[in-house]
Length: 158
Image 1 (cartoon, helix red, strand yellow):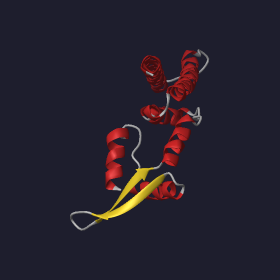
Image 2 (image 1 turned 135 degrees about the vertical axis):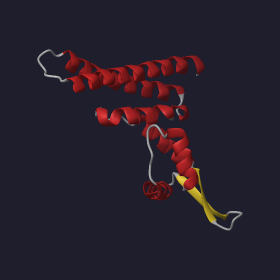
Image 3 (image 1 turned 90 degrees about the horizontal axis):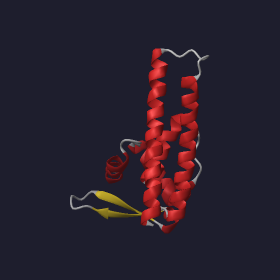
């Protein structure tokens, strides 16, 4: 559990931080569904350690989850998009292209909604809302730029 938590932290800390209480049931479910196998071994210090391995079914499930459509709810979108993009290396060229297109399309839609709100002269916006809308526009613009870079790399290197 500690090793898995550290691995998640080293790769995904800016996007997620699951607790030990969330990891243990998730690992159990993944193993019951055939996505993981585990083996128990005694460590040099005499402590029982559990080692997990991803199965072929687990790799298929990961690919399925990466390609599953995302919600267009802005609260969830940015974090989930970043998680999916950070795992895109497990997908083949066509799958990555589909993922990039979906994420870019959703990001553009959300960005355009924020832009419309910001430009709407009939909507009262105070200082704080304007600053947050500006920040959202920058955040989505940056994400779109990153995705476009990934698309170019995907075309060149695959």
